[in-house]
Length: 118
Image 1 (cartoon, rainbow, N blue to C red):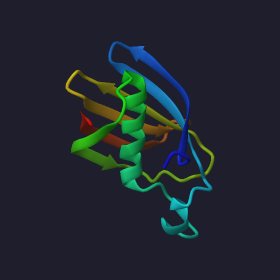
Image 2 (cartoon, rainbow, N blue to C red):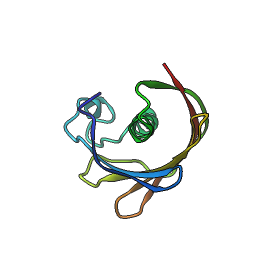
Image 3 (cartoon, helix red, strand yellow):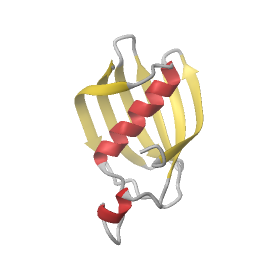
Image 4 (cartoon, helix red, strand yellow):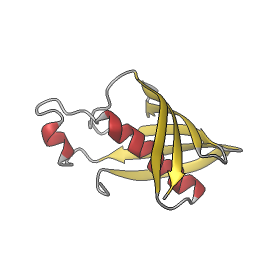
């Protein structure tokens, strides 16, 4: 999945809160099956994007998602060239609260989940 997305920017906006902008690869093989003719980012990939940004922000190395408390999908993410902005907080227990939006402000997903180090 290394070629699914690319981190464009990542900054700590305040103590424990980060904002990451990522670019989705519209040519990725995942879009051939999800869904042909109308590609959308699978919901589980939104969780993975958030996990990867948190790993990067905290310098965690490899983690896994151990629980998802909430994942509210508001609108689909399409690979149409619009960057995705993931804003999240993460505490010492690796609890994450995140909002995923388009760069122009359209809400995609709200997530509460917990990571575990591998």
